[in-house]
Structure formats: C-alpha cells, structure tokens
Image (cartoon, rainbow, N blue to C red; front, side, top):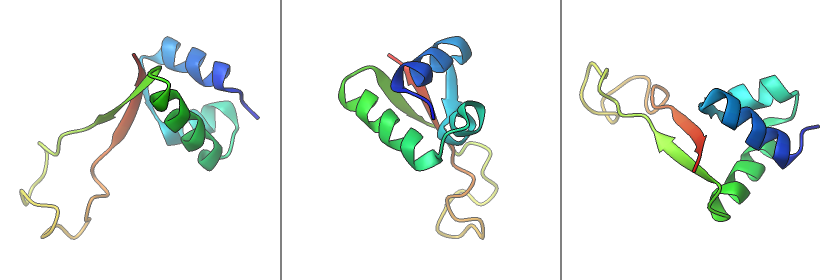
Length: 78
C-alpha cells in the first residue's frame, strides 16, 4: 500500500493524474487513493481539476447516453 508521500511524489513527477491512474501505478485500492487525495485537498496540498466537456457531441450530459462518464477528474499538486 502506498503512503500519502508516495502519492505526492508521483503527482510531482507526472504533473497531473486521475485517481485511477494513481491507484494502478501505486498498487493501492482506489478508495484509499481517493481518501488520501481528499485529505491532501483539505490540507491545501492538492487540487482537483475538472476536465471541460468541449469534445461533447450532444452539448449536454442530460441527453447523452454516456451520462457523465466522459468527464474526467484530474489531480495535481498546488
């Protein structure tokens, strides 16, 4: 299992990553990574970056058959 320091170090090396990518890279369950990222965000060490849906074909998640599955959430250090 990874520590919060390892999560921080990997974000520092990669710039920004999705929680799933962090989980796979560090061989750590995603709920634990999510908890660490939320804690880092509360401490002011990490920030959540929402990807814009500029590649959306329908223009609205409500009418999209994919729902919000196409929206990605990235994490980066502050």
